[in-house]
Image 1 (cartoon, rainbow, N blue to C red):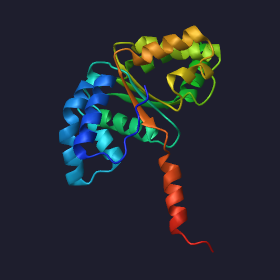
Image 2: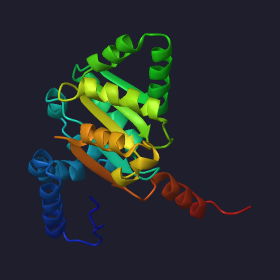
Image 3: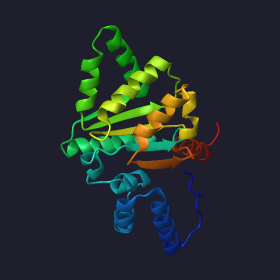
Image 4: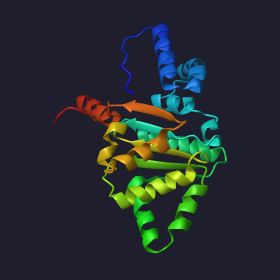
Length: 219
């Protein structure tokens, strides 16, 4: 779901827009907490990422409930930062956390299958409380790799949380998972009962580079 960008809103109008967005996205916890946390962010001069990290289920209830989380947005919009921040927060709260790149995970699963260690490897990934999978969607996976990843997600379904970061909207995942039925099943595993956060299309890295370029004289 893509929400329209709001510019130049009054504080009241912005609050109303966030409230409506939370209703549409079915984020009751964020809806109830964001006004108080927004005031705190202003007082403490938090960065945008700091505020968002504070806002996103700061008590780790979603991990306790085994809920999935998807961070979707273009490159440079802070997905990996948020994923790592959430994983760090969970680890500090005492949860077992594993962070891995999607391609590395799939390669490890393929090697494990070849060495007849697949069951053991899947069980190891199934035991952690939060599995953070970054850069899902950057590279196409063959059917075998996609099926192995699906096994990991199935092992964790409704028991332990998975948080993923992807630069592709769900409609574009068929470029990564070329089998339509398998793609639909993976999307279902990663979204059922969970939260979807869109980080947008404006790259922070590109904006920073442009800002530096305008501040530095050419010589």
